[in-house]
Image 1 (cartoon, rainbow, N blue to C red):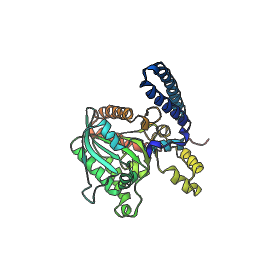
Image 2: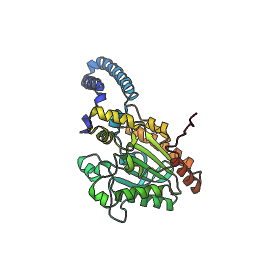
Image 3: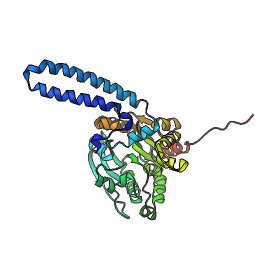
Image 4: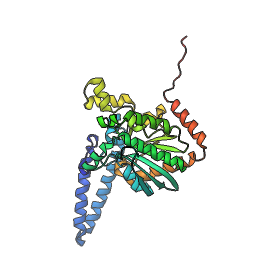
Length: 334
């Protein structure tokens, strides 16, 4: 499925990829025959030229993405998810389950681990890869037991003095009847309140989608960052388009995404986030290992800075950080 997934704006790359594949197949055939080695060397030069052209084309495409195209990249089926980052950048990961009240929610993954020299509690949304896993994880939309599980593990981390790392990747909290009956809004609200009081460093990174309260439920942090091709907003472009124009299509989704100011650049300019973590050329899905390495470096660097502060300093600064959001100056009329 994902192997042949092609974003609409990446179609100019298809022809280049086809040419590179064809030439590489010819090289393999000719390398088996010693009499055609000079021809194979010439073909390698052609492949190198095409690869350079491909790199320049990718750079050109990704340097000018619209807000809606950024949303499409954030939803790419090969984009690394929480469990991918756990495998790539952590050691000694010990997963913890359950909220001790209702059950376990696979849409949120929690566990103690090491990231570089840092021991921490890692919590993140998981969307799933294959159809069965996606259904089990509710496509990354957590139930209230997921948020209660996350809070329980955060409080455990505070007890042992461990910093907390959260990876946000959700279109929003699960909107079903069962989730509402079990207190979805209350669970998120309690997380917002309790996370603001935790006396250990908290860093949060939007690695894909950051939709509304579902994202904010694990993102009340001292430092918040976004990967370059992720989005963070009060509502998805489709949801916004359906409300404003009564239908969600390519045109209304594009207009909604632009109006919502949901890109990483928009969020850092508005003061919603503190930093943007650059992705490898062509997005995190093209080089997950490099992305994991850069993400781990950012986490270690920021946690080491935050560990210099006392618990009281962290809580006060966290409070002030969120109080500043949405502030503005009103000029007196003359």
